[in-house]
Every structure is written in C-alpha cells, then in structure tokens.
Image (tube, rainbow, N blue to C red; front, side, top):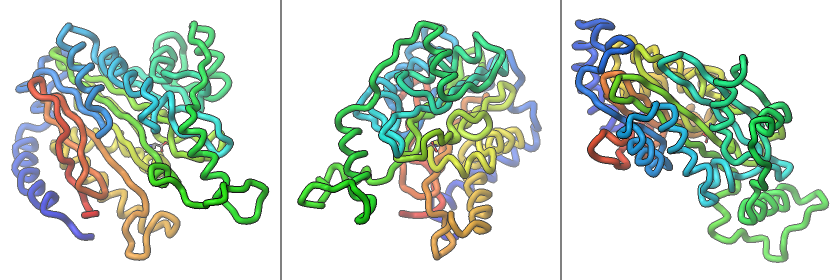
Length: 351
Ligand code: ASP
C-alpha cells in the first residue's frame, strides 16, 4: 500500500490527537444535550455539496433542527439536473428508469428513515424523513415507497432528463456488438458523454448544531446502469450514513456494495468513539476496507488495490471534521461556521 504525504502528515497529527483523546476517554467527546467543547455549528458534505453546506448552515443559524438543515441543503442538489448522481437528472438503471435511494438519521432521537429504489419522486430525502416521522418503519422500497410518498401528497414527476436518457441510450447501444440496439454511424461518444459510460455519485451531508446535536442525510441515484431494484449503501443505516448523538456522524459516497459489507459509516463512528479524529477514522476505515478487498478478486486490481472509488466524511461532537478517499487528491465541502469551502481530503492512494 503506497501512502501519500497527506497520509503521513495525518498520522502525525492523528497520533497527537489520539493520545489526548484516550487520556480524556469518552468524556472528551461530550454527552448528549451538552454544548460541544469548542465547536459551534458545522456542516460537512461530499465534493458536490458546497451549496448544501451553505444552505444548511444558513438554516442552523436561524435555529433550525439539524435534520431540517441538511435535508434542505441536499434538496438543492436533488433538484439540480446538472448533478447526474442525485435526484432529478440522475442517471437511470439499465432499463432507463431512474431509481433513487435516500436515508436520514436524527441524532437527538436516534431515529432514522429511508427509501430505496423509489421512482418518480424528486426528493427521496424528504420521503425518507417521512418514513422516520410518519411510520413505524425504517426502510420502505420500490412501489411501496412511491405509494407512501403519494399518500403524503408528493407528486409524480419525470426524473429522466434528455441528457440522462441520451447517455443511457449511448451506453445501451454500445454495450454489445451482438444485439439489436444500433449506435449511430459514428460510434464515438461525444467528449462530454464519455465520462458517463459507467459512473456513480451521491450527496452525503452531516451537521452539528449550536446545541451539540447531530443529524445526517445521504441521497443518490446510485450506480448508473444498475440492475433494476438494486439498492446501494445510501439508504442502509450504518452503511452510507450513521449518526450517534453522543459521538459523531459519518457518511459515504462511492461503491455502495463495499460499504454494505463492512457497515462503514457505523464503523467510522465507532472509531470516533475510540478517540480517533474524523480524518483518522475515515482513513482507518479505508485501510480496513482495502484489507477486505484483498479477499475478493472481483474487487481488486492486479496490483491488489481496490478497483472502485470510496469517500468517507466524518464529524464529531466537538466540531472536528474530516474526510478521506481511497484515491486522491479529492475535495469535500465543509462549513466551519465561518468559511464554506471545498477542502482537501486525505487519501490512501495517489491517482
Ligand atoms: N454509494 C452510491 C451507491 O452505491 C453511489 C455513490 O456514492 O457513488 O449507490
């Protein structure tokens, strides 16, 4: 495993923080209902989440619940057809149908809600919230999720934009030389489209309010061209999102199956609870995942590295936050109460 400077630098800071944290034990992290030691409000998100962190912080400043704040933040991205990894305009499954996954978790009440493979609803994060508040369930999928949304007044909308449809069509027409779908005479993808031959993306957003309460959301159209009905990690509590109000919050974007098999977000929060810094906890999880990948030839490159992307985001009750990716350099979005910016994430492998 080749470690970068970023990683080594982190190990130095991480070791110092770890020692302090261990000396103080869990006390250092704080207890629910108490204001965090240093902090104030924080919002952390994936690299596509700069508008979400801005919006969520604006709401936190008015005293909004942290879950309302992060949902309002990611709604901006769900509604944006230019982000083809989330909500309206998201890339469809292999049948050309947009299926969305989302989860929410509310720290103060340790409750969660999620929907998976939901069609025709632009803001699955809002439906996930309703599952949490207006049902006894944690996860509703497919047709049932749509009916639940309609029962609560959501309207069906066409989520497949022309751009997403054309990308899907080009993928479909170039999938095989031996079927009945024919690509245009020139078999070259236009440059812009080439990037979308196979792709994934998601938005995760986690927040800490002025009272020291945490919440989070993850919402996605999942892997492009997925098998219909495929559910990723985003709506699975513990995989694509986890919040423990006494410790911290974590979320993920990247190849979801790997997170489901390792309950990555839950594990990162446990690492936070052991006193690791958020960046250290994310890197530790990546190392653990890289070790598991060695057991599965389908998920590793010939040199043993994972053949997929993974990004983790974490925030503790003290207001410390960080992110790490398998491959870097990459960026994540964070609002520290003063400055909203894309910041460099730590990483295991240099791209
Ligand atoms: N985690 C998402 C999924 O597997 C995709 C992504 O984040 O890129 O559905």
